[in-house]
Length: 273
Image 1 (cartoon, helix red, strand yellow):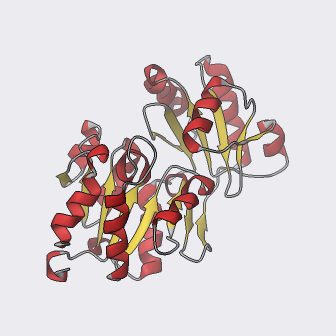
Image 2 (cartoon, rainbow, N blue to C red):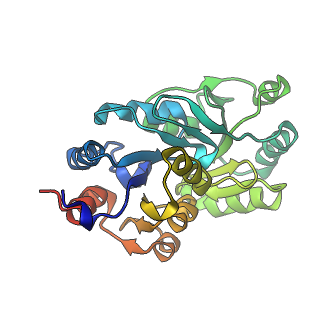
């Protein structure tokens, strides 16, 4: 590699519909290029709305365990598996969000997450089943109110519904957010996170851990929950399949996830052969 052509020392990448193809897998090209970068000493960090159990299985694509940011920035974990930060939603606000979901009347499923758990109330719910099919493992079926009453504060809620309801879901939660951060992470899901939390918060924590500046990092993303991250680094890159607001926030737009956009961009930019 000609290092002079690549001034960045850290690569941050969203997962779904960015590094991952639409089939939920990392292509051979994408994994190969990132492993070459790792061997050249470049830091690689996965940044996702997913929970840890939905991120860590992808380490099998790489030569080593990677650091990652989960829950849109609420949880940051280093390459040894140690938690760097862990932001949660206060119990009172969490109860309020459950009530908003129940009173919304919008078809869907409310899901709750902590570092170790993915909770739902009805595992047979059609929306829960869709998420299970995509994630490849099952959540724990519990009474969410009882979990909160036990004192366990969640890192994130996710309301999963049909794309036609996504804007309505976003508006419902934003109108009752109590300062919590609300954003769409996909066409099907709206995420509810602790106040002030987004992916850039996780990226900043990881850069501090790496001993690097924001200008020394590049980031890839496709969804509205990636916008803050793309704006916070030296080079923000939007996928060809990204929504228009993401493309406008990024400095560069590349080919889509199903066209191996990340891999091809890095091959060209990093002069790998």
